[in-house]
Image (tube, rainbow, N blue to C red; front, side, top):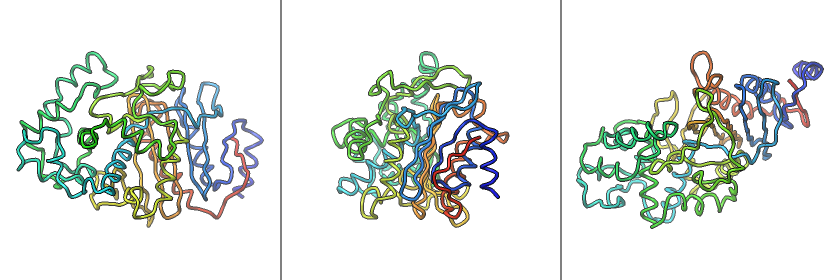
Length: 384
């Protein structure tokens, strides 16, 4: 019956949604989500299903949906960057340069200036899982935040640098004892990236290209926007609908500055699905039993772990001034999804009536639907 309904829809609608060899439920969810996109949205979707990779691209205008080839269009992935910074940590762990239970104290530049008793309880695992006790907004970053408010209002973390966290760690107490609670922390991830770069006598963006992008052949991924050619920069929109600029920052880059495309993000997800347990990518799939603020979700190595109806999804989202992203994979069914949109997360049409993120809602629904192998129709292009 469902196939008949889909066939009949071909008679009345003109926009094609390419979803070859995907479950019909996946096709239906895609149709529903695309209909809700705000005007001027460009969406790039990547899917891994039954050992096949699919890329789907659409642009929304006042004339409706238009199919586009945007598998290599460059988007900011925002906080999904944290999973890649965590990848550096796991590489160094495998190489025995660090241990997740090691204190960060002696790895900090100028650590002799800090109170050992205060800093020593903070371990690398705490930095990975947002449980370090480091303030998410210490008073020492007030000045660079105010400076950005005046000169770069679309990029609030533009001027936050290591020196501001250095002064915080030197002069102020931690918010709570390491490991005591979970609190999402961009600053701690920025500091983590700085620590890794300092240990290697390099920069975080150099490590990202050398250790992550090049080995995985993510040839269209960039640590910061300075590496992206202008003709490859996708127009994005702020909450108010104005054109957005890249969030290239300083210390906070390691928490959210990567630019990538659906093609390369599928490489990142596929590498996790294919990884052996003893590899650094295998370690990326570990869950550290740290509850987050999201129901049934726990912190792992950069990734979050959601348990729902006997399913296990490993995921992360991202948001910058003009972009929204979602990525997730199911290690049991070996499926994955990435969604990239050129819209601020608070732009009209990006949330439902309950103010819940549509990209996250439909991202999980799509991933869940990919586990259903009973209603696949090969070669079908559904129109709506």
